Amino acid sequence: MARVSRQNPQQFPGQRAHPVDEVLPVGKLTLYGFQHVLAFYAGAVIVPIILGNALGLSREELVYLINADLLTCGIASIIQALGVWKIGARLPLVQGVTFTAVSPMIAIGLGAGGGTAGLLVVYGAVITAGIATFLFAPFFSKLVKYFPPIVIGTILTIIGLTLIPQGLQDAAGGAQLIGHPEYGDPKNLGYALGTLLFILAVVRLGKPYLSSLAVLLGLVVGTAVAWFLGDADFGAVKNADWFGVSTPFHYGMPKFELFPIIAMVVVMLITMVETTGDVYAIGEITRKKVDNATVANALRADGVATVLGGVFNSFPYVAFAENIGLVRMSKVMSRFVVVAAGGFMIVMGLLPKAGSVVAAIPHPVLGGAAIAMFGMVAAVGIQILGKVDLREERNALILAVSLAAALLPNAVAPFFERMPEDVRAVLNSGITLGSLTAVLLNLFFNVFTRRASMEIDWDEIENDEPEEAHRPMGAHEPLGAHAPADPYAPQGPRHPQGAYDPQGPHHPQAPHHPQGPHNPQGPPWGTPTH
Image (cartoon, rainbow, N blue to C red; front, side, top):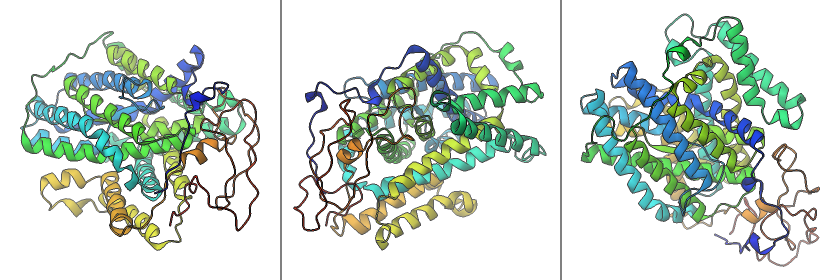
């Protein structure tokens, strides 16, 4: 794989800070951060709800799990976005409980007898898997060369396509209504469609600042309409406590058993692939260079957050793809917005009454917003795949077979029922099965055959001036026009890393000449390095 020499942007003192590192005014940080919380909330609380119900926990224990989850999500998001030592990618990535771990944790908990006794075995496996993730992070980051754009693009497309049905399920009324007449009621679909249309209208007609708040405004307006029509109930807010602290090992000391630990370590290996894809996706959206060190730091943050989850009565953590779609829609790239969101999550984890206000947002309203955000995650994957030569049959097969594998658990639910419990717990997930398929097929087609693969050229991405659709509205003004480069033309001199030069647009590229000299910087992303 071609390697591109890069210079440190700090060597050029006149340059403006990258939008990822911009500290926005307090008012904008508050609004944008709260928007991330609203977009994240449904996905954040669904895991403890599913697990708690499956293990037969009481309502009080279930509420405790939700508060513990929100508290740990906030701490983990701040660590990931702000960065401490070599922990945290320092990118606008929100941390949430991974859906990949749901089935294995239910199997582990039920195998240990269910209830709080099952939770103790789950927490022992979670803590051990978190430590293993932290220790393995630098080694895993060196395997990034085995995740070329065809793999990353496929994984992100799978994540988006897998999440969209969850948004549609909320639009129909939520999973809790399945089997009831209210599920799929036209009124629910009306709320979802109205919320989605409102978001699209704000993006289309609103000024840049309002457009960046489209999701937040859609959720507020949709909830207000539902409340006015009697379909939003805030009665639980009155009964919620004002203050509650999640104490370490609330249910007792964790129990460490071999097979549950092995199952959870396998889950974390899969989530490491998912986080790697999310890190590359946010790098593509924000035009921020991602290298092995960035991936390793992000994975260390996953490991630390997962250990904290086991200690503070929560679960394994991963970078949330849902909020990547929000970054793409809002065009607000500052990582300090995620830090603000983490602060809100901590407050909600400590103030159950505040969390119950957000919990009162009707499922159809959340579903309408989720359809747009989850679709944007798939769009990022498709954008990356657009830079891959899919006329090459090997690349096309990697994409085609991986998509088919990802659809298998949902399309043919009984497929895994006769398999061993441990196997079913790991593979009964479209994201897991599709991602593993993409990685293994790439190894089979491109690595074991020693075929040259493609590399992400971060100089090309960073020096590509963001279009109007990619600028952080209200946070970073355009710096000049930029003509798209011919990806097959020899490249002339570029600005060094750090595309946000206040002096104006980039230097023009050298004129195209079919017999031009070999490009010493290597090909841009998507060009084969044969």
